[in-house]
Image 1 (tube, rainbow, N blue to C red):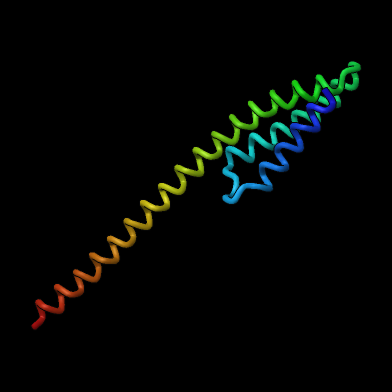
Image 2: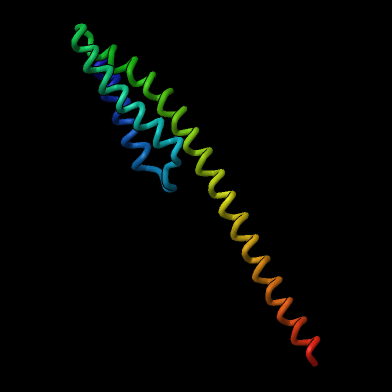
Amino acid sequence: MKRLSILIVAFFIFVSAGCSTPLTTREKGAGLGTLGGAALGGIIGSASGNAGAGAGIGSIIGLLGGALIGDRLQARQDRERAQQRQLEATQAELARQKIEIERLKRNREY
């Protein structure tokens, strides 16, 4: 089981190093949860005499918890980005309308 925890850590290092695009918040949460869960599980497991099993179980629990938290944070970021795009579109439309009003005022004066 000690090999399993080493393989899990190595897997995440290689996967994250080989990505050509930045990791999403969801992926970061899953990775950090797995590493934290493996470390905590290894510590708890060593106290009970089986660090490898503890690390394996901890990494699975950490993966699930980290992915869940990362998913929620990702959804929040996606909503904020959508709101920001909508705000920018509204501001651009207001600027366009302001220019149009000024143009109409100038045409009316002549």
